[in-house]
Length: 228
Length: 295
Image (cartoon, rainbow over the protein chains, first blue to last red):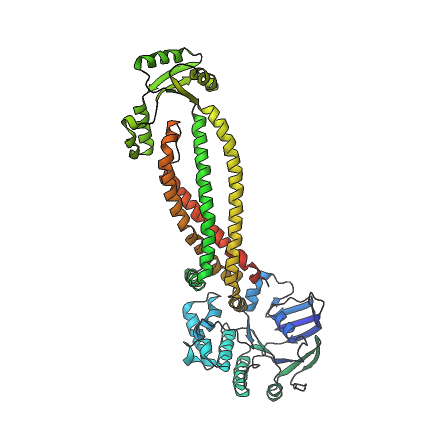
């Protein structure tokens, strides 16, 4: 579960990126985060995986209290979450298999468990036949699928996707959405920041609209609501 | 830490060392230069300590007899020495015997000085009733006929302790400064290699790696840098010390002192340098990546 209560974030330069934001996302929910560029979406997402600390308010993610959290507990929060970025963030010197396995190796999982689980998630994202290829040998869509596989390999409670289809063509984006929805059906919270109007309108889910750091709209089955 | 994780970290550190090529060489060079100087200082300081101990323990007056003094004249000298107040015992030792002592403590190579080549003097070793009397006895002995020189530990000790104290002060200060510079150089060199791996560290953190897990490969990499950097200083100092030992030993032995024997001393010095190298390498590495591990 994700719970934010009166959360604000002020940067050292004086800019307040998030203002008094409160919301709750239950397990198994799929929510889009929409809003104009510079509205505070990235700040909102970064606070969830504790890349940024909130200035005030309360944040609870997957059972962790992020406000009182000690730095040495952050890795344990992140093991309960998966994060996917627009630019994939894969390690170029590692193969597809190794990139995904990496997330399990850092938590010192057993080698056999790593092998089984990595093949399982690569099958889910349709890349089981590409395990020996390197990121630079893959298309953008394939790289994003590797990133998704890495994000879910540790069976996270929450999957955060920051513009995961931003660099992809519509067909490839659909493929990624299929995967994210499949993961969501297994009970994982999926939180996705996007500017993809067509996708939000066609694949209806909860919509959280952020403008000027405030949550201005929270609709159970909303639409994008902005003109491109 | 699990064994396979340790293996993985070691493997990663080797790979990284290789991948960073010239940067690794630069860091290794920083350690090499530092440890070379540190090693030389250590060798000096430990030998100064040894000599000062020798001097402290030496409460005898060594009366060196002029060359060409006949046996009869030597007997006369002995009697005169025995008559000096506070003298307990006077023992004669020929230059041949003195050389044998040198050969005994410094090795067979000194046998080449036998016969006319022997640079040592016949010596009367005068022991006094009280160590405090050595100065007085030495002064009186020096005035006697057939005496080339009369030395005693105390005076040399005073001079040496003064030198020792400043060498120690400056040496320790200089060594600390060198180590600080080395850590700084290494941390900066490794920082450049870490900058290129910033994304990798970011991804490691993102997938839930603890700071300790992220730090290990870098720590090992720094330790390898330190260990590789210590090879040249060890070779240079071992060879150099051996050379100095062979050349200084005889002149020091004639004054009754000796340097530390190379065997165990060099082993200890090498080990110390290796430990220092590993520590400053690892420290430099860990310092340089600190800011990448902050939230």
